[in-house]
Image 1 (cartoon, rainbow, N blue to C red):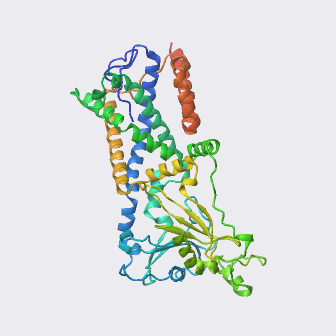
Image 2 (cartoon, rainbow, N blue to C red; image 1 turned 30 degrees about the vertical axis):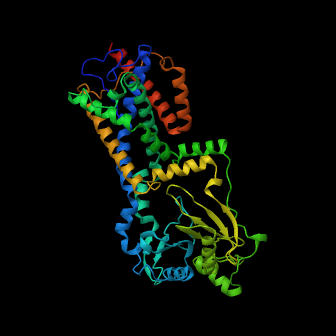
Image 3 (cartoon, rainbow, N blue to C red; image 1 turned 90 degrees about the vertical axis):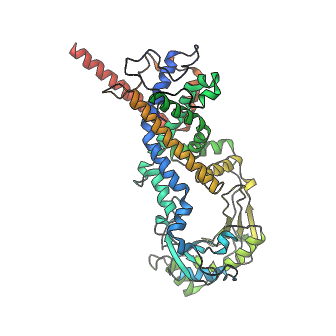
Length: 494
């Protein structure tokens, strides 16, 4: 958000106005001056990044529709919906035939009733030696799609080139690498400062006339209209913006780690799924030369030590039919992801992929040889902070309420774009010619201009948002150096 009031072309008064009603008489002029400056700088500098996040966020919100348009033939089954599907084990074998020697990491059948039963079964596969990355797949991994009725492969999608993956990377780092991602976190952190300072500066107007604060009445000049649009939109979008920024910061590098620390401090870790088979029972697997060949095949056929374990994930894939029946009996009704065991003595994992309200995600561990459910973790067993984080993420990713969530976030992003444009227009109209038009600095020590409650709030923000704290300290250092340089130049000319 840009500053809602910029300095006029005439020399600025001791206290900058902040719209109709500059605040109660009890407010210290230094405090108002400081917040006007913070509001301007935070909005002016962060707005270009926030603008890009709004545009890419709209695209990411509609990712399911984009993926369906680009890969419709691969994701859609050509068979009739009333025919009996083939066993999952046969569908998996059809996918494995496309990439012999690759490891099956997950199988996700089409959810019952979704798109009238015309979806395909997704078989996620990783190349030999591949290691899962940040978003759960190895470099080079693909998902092979199989028609559940005919058992024919309809196509495959490389995970790194999925529209969702591409758009997520564009949204977080403009596809320039992980080293650029902190810029998005920095802009979001300063957006919080802009929102909070804007509310503080406009609070007197809200108190005097709630209707006037949330309307465009009385805006006759171009600047007044831009100011009214910026202010009204900012106030109307405050709660939604705070929710969107807060949920987005939960999985950033630095603020996300602070959230994890808070969860560890104020919330129990919650139950974890135990996938250990009773007594460490061995999984059924081929023995002797057959086992060694199978292991070598799915590890690339080379670099296999002579004492390598005989467990091979491919040996347990036929058990998926038993696991699927157990999951259905356990009440996992919907889009279920089946993950085969990755080590000797481990069980299958079946996860109900529920990202829509009301949330009921459930994960179970199943003994593939007997179909016995060994462990179960339900949604209501998770700690409240973990549930709150998940709800926030699903909301931010536009899946929590389906298409209504997509429409809401699209409207919110458009509102943010208009908000930024109005803010820059205000600055352009009111800026002094030949200068940037930054509001004047606070005279005297900074701590004298900040009330104690405000210092506490900023301290909490600085702890929660490390990039905000570091950037603010860097700004103070640069400003002090610049002031010293200017004073030295003035003394030299004198």
